[in-house]
Structure formats: C-alpha cells, structure tokens
Length: 220
Image (cartoon, rainbow, N blue to C red; front, side, top):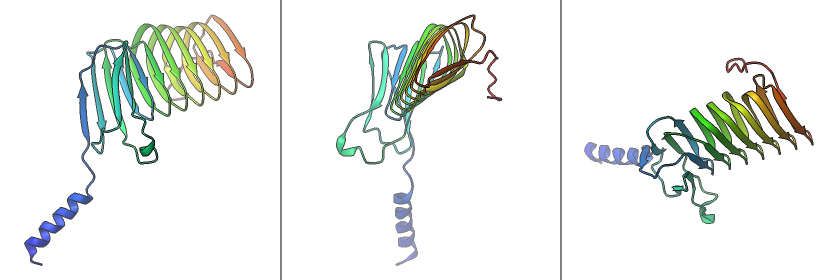
C-alpha cells in the first residue's frame, strides 16, 4: 500500500471512530408558562426573558425526542418504544427562556434547573426520582413531592407555602409567612426562614422541619 492510500484509509478509519458532533435545534412554539418534563431529560429554564426553546444532544440523534405545547404547558419527553427501551438513549439538554413560569411537573428521573422565578403563585409537582433545583420567589407556592423526588430549593422563597411530601420525597425551601404541610411515608422537607403560622401533619415517619434560620448555600 502506498503512502497516500494509507493516509486515506487512516483518515476514513478515524472518521468512523470519532464521536458524532453535538447538535442543537431551536423550536418556535406557542406561548407557555408551565413545563412538564420526564423520561430522564435535563431541563435548564430561566424566567423573565423572551421565549425561546433549544434542545441539544451530543450524538445528533433526535429520533425519540418529543416536544409540544398543550394548553399553555411545554411538554418535553421521549417517545415510548418498547423495542428500543433497552437500547442506549440519547442525552437531551433542553434550554428554555420564558416571559413567566408558574408551574413545573417533573418526573421519571428528569433533572431540572429553574432560575429567576418571580410570580404570584408557583406549583411544583415532583415525583419518581426527579431532581429539581430552583431559585427565585413567589407569593404562594404549592409543592408536592413523592416517590424519591429531590427538591433543592433553599434559594427559592415563597411567602405562603402548602407542602405535601410522601414516599421518600425530600427537599428544602425558604418560607417567610405561613406554612401548611403534610408529611408521610418517610418524606422529609427542611424549611428555612421564620414563618409566623405553621400547621404540619405528620405520619409514618414523614417530617417537615422548620429551621428558623436564613438559608446559606455554601454552608448547607
């Protein structure tokens, strides 16, 4: 084999061995203020800016990615396909900017990072091993944690909170004025701040603990 043929063969082999380049796609969608994320996807969402949605994957394969807006809810997930369920799945990172965000429904091992939340009311529904990190504030918040959900929101503050935690769900947040809570089946939430009115029901090893201190991210 001559040198030029060897170089061509080597280049072809290197091209086949090299990992596929990442790819990002942008989506022009109807307006939304709520997000539903599942199926192990990663979400990075920021409130307060012009609406935009982009999706990135390292291998450039979007074949099972699903996205749509239903009644003001941005729904992001994977297509269910039993034949492909045991195959390696693409890692999707969804980056979202929205004028306002008022609710997040996260499930099935998804990882969500929310920032700059500023609204009158916000609702979190987190379940099935989903992880959520949130920062911002709302006047009122409703929080439902279950089935191993992880809610890291010491830097999210609301004046009035209604918390329902169960089945090994756990988390933290800051509450300033009033707290109504129901904890059961090993669910646990740490509440920072000094709410004046507290009403908590506990059962089956559940716990909601009011720490009465200011949340410090570096020390917690």
